Amino acid sequence: MASVSSAHLVLFIAAILFSAALAGALTDSATIIGDSVNDAADTDAAHANTAFSVVSDPGAPNSVYNDTTDTLTILVKNTGDSTPLSDPRDITVLVDGEYQTPASTAVVSANADTWRPGTLLRVEVTVDLAPNTETRVVVDTNGHRDHFTFTTS
Image (cartoon, rainbow, N blue to C red; front, side, top):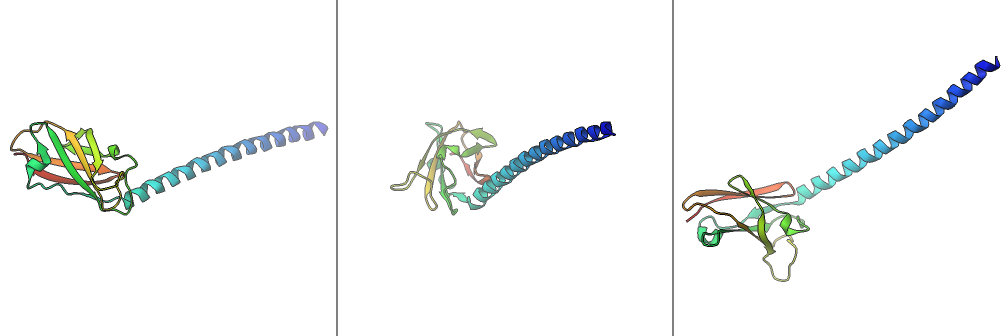
């Protein structure tokens, strides 16, 4: 009889240890999932508050593209409720479907160093464009994008 009780005691202790290990793993998994949900919510909130418009004039191609220096200058107005970029260089620019690294970015407002609501951001990209061709530019940040099309002169 004593041997049966000993076996049951060993199995009971093993079951308790297994349950404790399983509870720890489930707690860690729940924490990781909770953090992931919070990160996704923060990203969605940033996307919802991000709004901007490309305000460069497609009717004045010489103000948009300088064929001497191969510089494309894009003016983008922050029309959202937040500052979408902690660093203005974090903006994505596609020219005719190809990623271009911005050569420079600058906030075009007096006494402003961040791209606050209502301010303009000047984005300059070095790219070689053929004359008299239609060019499509897409600007993206925080999942929000805007585009404009102009014809080089």
